[in-house]
Length: 479
Image (cartoon, rainbow, N blue to C red; front, side, top):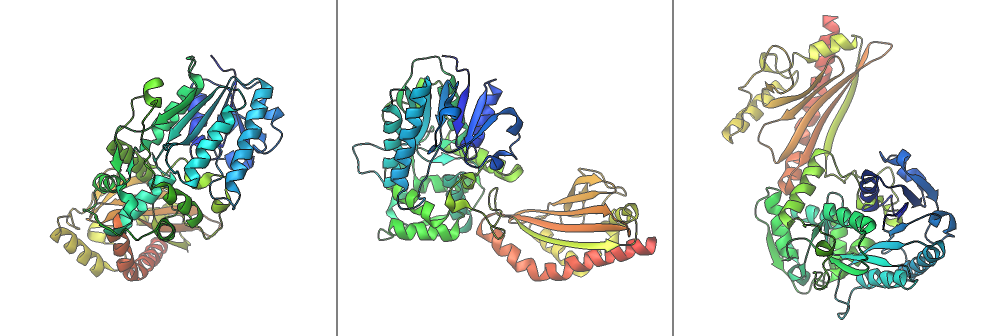
């Protein structure tokens, strides 16, 4: 079967936002059903798809017209007391519309779990939705997955924040439950294969990665991949899922209502037992270590391309106070100043920083930091600098990452730190002369990284304003 057009629901969500570009790369025509089309406007593929405003609760005649395969990625987990009933109604409405329109196949991403066991409300609803979709008579490929490992996924962010922040964790008994985590890359590949396969495949296919582990082992693997010291887990059988969800809501960016539903599912084993989606669709799954390593690389390098909070749910209605957590915690110290000097003159003065010239402010503290760095095995201030700034050159205990005269200079710290740090200056031309923005950025690693940032904050309040003030003053004298 070669589908002529694909309908994707949930395109603004975590998985959907990655499936759409993957389908486009296969040369397929994609139509997206979105309650809030404006949320898709920032996507790089926005102009390559057709967008229909609407919901799976609505009349779907227009959305289904001419569709060969419909991809169902809608989830209302924890959204109100009646979310389970609403999910079932939505699936029934969607399936009926697909049948009327002559859709050839529905592809659905559901949840793993043994149907013979007492499953959580979340996993039961996931499987009931699959049953409702299939009841219409349209062939359905239901991919049932457990823990999804990927930058920005709810499972990965819970795992990352807990292990990063807590060297010692008091853990409930569900940390000994077995699971089969799967990479988001494998999930996307499987969904695309399910859409495009010409084999007459239908029914439930179970999805899992290459490794079966306990949640405790998954935490240990994460700490190893992230380069963190050994984490210590202290099991406490009396710690209930409800208490666990409140703790997760406090420590991680996952809101308590969502954490509650997810944690209640952690008592159920979610491993592949029947038909393997990877075998039937010809996909070789990644190992847990490779999945976590990839997620960390994306998080550190560019941030998550999609994140679980992208979903159009009430939990994720943002406001101006929300932290930019996805892609990792980042601390910043940003300061702005104006100068009568031109942007070229200001940047010329900036270009003399470091080496014998020093750092404009708090030079004694910089020297102390350099000595400490040398004592713990770092380069210290002894490397100095070349006369001219060039990308890739050392500058004391920094490395020059970007030089764009007269606009930008960015340095990456090579001193020994529990995290990664950058110091960036951007210069703009104004009517009166120029404006300079100085930004210190720190991406902490684990609990020690966060402790380090708050320990040096008092020194930042002295050093950074002085640096900027003297830099501007020097540029004006030179003028």
